[in-house]
Length: 291
Length: 291
Image (tube, rainbow over all chains, first blue to last red):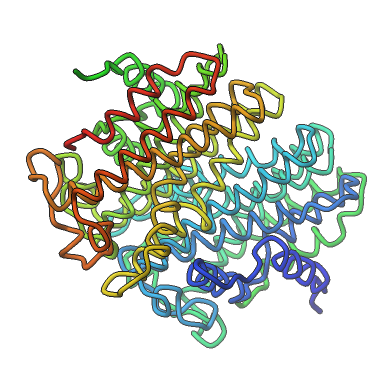
């Protein structure tokens, strides 16, 4: 039994038609390249988490600008990660990667474009609405995706290839490379919804736990899944001599740690007054995912 | 006789020690790579223009966050432009380009980092100060550096290589690729300083004119200067089959157009009540520059 989040996914896909419209004319190419990767699908995990946390603390307005922005930042990071100079991946989500279709130069610029437009969308929205919550949310995202967040984690990950690193360093890599953006999603939702300091802190901590579960399962799937299931080549971690949780734990131990983290995440949700049913379901399903 | 802007350059360089500090620890590499390009010097033209416009409309506080942000965005664009997949340049400002020192992957991420941190710095500042001017300034920069600004201009420029294009298309390229950020600098200064709508519009227009002069002179210098003077290889436009103003005009005609634009820019400044002496000098010197 899988929880149905399709209403959220649809909501986000619809929001993109407003915030990242198709364009003809002089700038068609860069819009096409950005759309190619945004429309490659993906589970819209980060914006879904943001919207659910927003609702959990009682948010009632539209935060579509922020939902799109976090997905655009996630997508830009994938485009740049896939480049020949980085992971050199030809497939992503079962389709050719951006640079295989548009060439390296346009792929670099499409990533730059998604990153810049993500901030532009949030800044326009914050300017139109006034108030501090929206500006605060944009600030959280800029920190999480920056050099002491996602980018820093990626650099540390690359530097650690072909090296023996400590479990502590691996944790720093993952906390930043993937965890920062997931925790930003849940924290932003709570801030945008006007949650109390306690709610913001609980939901951010929830995000950190499930971010770690996400990464542990990712490492296991890269070693054990099939390309058909995963939509991208498997075994790339081993091929690139990357450090993963499997360098430290067996698959069984990995799942055991992931289960402990999931329980902790769910117990945090119990302390929130609003409806957290779907957030709980997401936490419990992360551990079962096959792609 | 050259106007002395060293006080402004120093001010900006000092501001970087606050807004882009040196860091040890896990994230040292990415900070080092970002600093390498920020500290390569450059004339700090954009932040200097911003500060001068800010003062011209009566601004009296510190806008260091925005001065650093626009220079960081300019610098990130140079790092990405120099990449092998783009212009493939080995030298910039007389030093090896970022990817020649740190490798392509880190150079891509250093660019991403500068872009993200630029927004982070502005968002933190806007959040701390409250008020709409600072948020508005950040929004202007996000638009100017985005896909319908600097990035779009760069894509259009690449698409036009080895092709005959119209003068209109060339103008669109330059208005966006280089002009947008220069006009953003002057407009942001006016907005941050609380200038009237008329002052904002006059200073933005001034920025557009001098942006065009800057580009025309750039095209001429690429064809006529020496590597020693320019600090980067000359003749790269011709080598990369780029369209420049020299495809449409003689060198003499280029300078004549640049002079007309300069006069127009200076006449706009005459309508501003505050002190615009240095802005006038900058406009008149752009046309005489040798690097």
